[in-house]
Length: 302
Image (cartoon, rainbow, N blue to C red; front, side):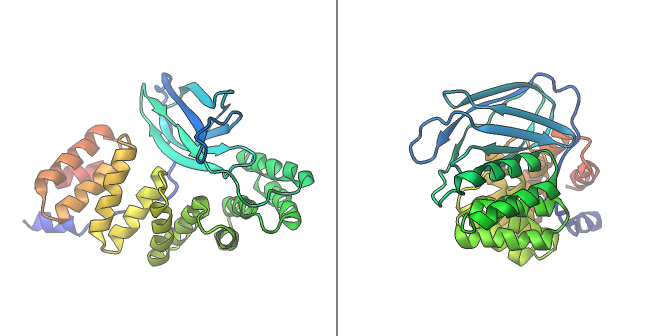
């Protein structure tokens, strides 16, 4: 019994923007899907799709029917970006399992605000390309010039904030993300970024405020949902954390960390059967996970 109570003292470790090293066997992995306009439902051709994981990077473009298929991807945890002129970019993340074909279908929201002047569109595109290439100082310069010409465009502040954060200045990035939200309070991309920065600062109360707004707007990004659930749990809001992790499991059943967190929550609630079910699933899916030894010790005590 003492062992069980000692286990209950463990808390979830906040995990932000996780990238996993790929398992080199995943050569049969692929993604496919159709990208459509959120208002008309029509397919969007020419959407640039960038998938990154640790040192890996894959790029592709939708065809004239808005369809994309990309094979030969390594098994890893990917961050994915969808970009097209005239649309708010989409972001997501997912874990690609061995021999899996992942459906990455999504909708992009048309940009309602006035776009940058024609002569500055190239700067926005250049900034995005520099970000994807990891050249963050150059991206900041290009986007700052674009903002000078179009100071009411929220996407420009989002992109610059993203580059600034990647360049190592989260406080300055926070200013840009919040400016983008002043211009567009429903810009999910910035809501999730602000939530992440506050979570990294261990300001969980503010992190939850922004994550909840993104959650209520239907965000499906795996890492954002995971971090939101962890913040809720660490604040003692286990019921809401449970809802978030259950939603995450439905969105991406191949993300093993979700089952570890579900197991911990159910154990704390006294439902040992559920706790055992999820912890066993977690260990089976990812035996090399840093929390696998913890899960095994918990299972031995249940």
